[in-house]
Image 1 (cartoon, rainbow, N blue to C red):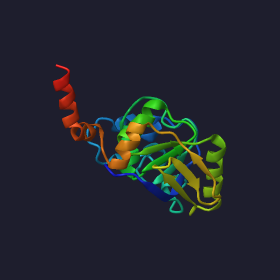
Image 2 (cartoon, rainbow, N blue to C red; image 1 turned 180 degrees about the horizontal axis):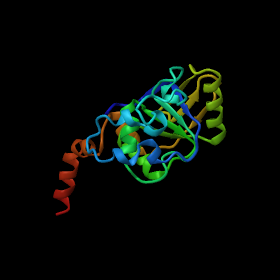
Image 3 (cartoon, one colour; image 1 turned 30 degrees about the vertical axis):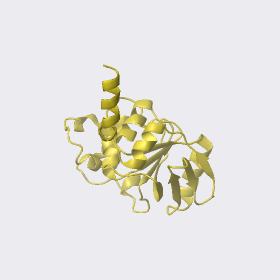
Image 4 (spheres, rainbow, N blue to C red; image 1 turned 120 degrees about the horizontal axis):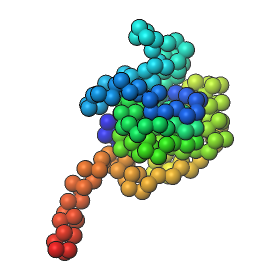
Length: 196
């Protein structure tokens, strides 16, 4: 899951639903596992599959028209409990970016910690993205992390997005928190020697 970020251009999977909570992203019955492997198979499990395990044809992840590594989601994505497994499922499915007009804070941080970039846009820009994708499922979106811009390639419209400088550095260099500490081990040890 550790992948360096730079500029990602991709088609999108639209999920124009508001208040999608972490139990809808990954139902509680899948939380017993402590290994990240396989969580993508159960992303949006109850929306995606019937009780007998057959795919629901009307759910967007089962629609061959849509694909790509960008999920475009409605307002207030990732609300509810703070389960990190929801971010594991999103990353495990193959999404690199989630775009919404609002994220629950804990879920947003869980995504960042799992190398998924949460991009906050204005509600009008989000609705324009949904319209563009509905009109043409092959619509591409460009997410430029170095310049912190997201662009709807169908209309040419762009918006800036915010990201914590530390998390931006980690994503661009493919580092998790432990990698970052190891990379700065000499500086940490020097500081400790000076402050004994």
